[in-house]
Amino acid sequence: MTVLDASALLAFLNDEPGADRVAAALSRPCRISAVNWSEVLAHRPSSRHAADEPALAGLTTGNPALLSVVSFDDIHARETARLKAAATGVPLSLGDRACLALGRLERLPVMTADRVWRSLKLNVRIVVVR
Image 1 (cartoon, rainbow, N blue to C red):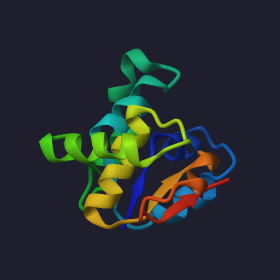
Image 2: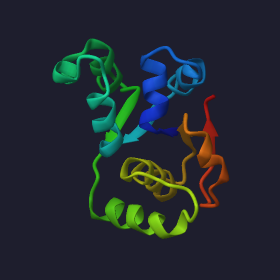
Image 3: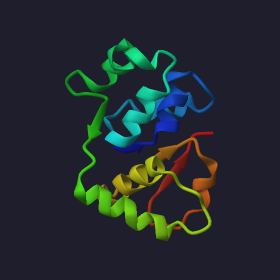
């Protein structure tokens, strides 16, 4: 199982470089933070109707779903906040930290399209798709 960053899932949905690596990860159930899921919904071309987009709905429905959206609760918020200090020298957005926090908490690899994450020393396995 893998945690997907919004950048990785968007690469897959937009058929960008690295989409094949994300597709391979999605051959098994993956997880995504609700924060990152919101980013994906907001960055789709038809963001006003993204929640109803068949490509997106197909990821989170089915038995089993290809993608589980994990709620952003107090535990995730605290871990996300801890990462702000731990990621010195690398600018990370709230969404970046929410993704990494989920990976750390669940001891799962994190897949992203953001190459700068390679320099992080956070005890999280990071897979860069391009």
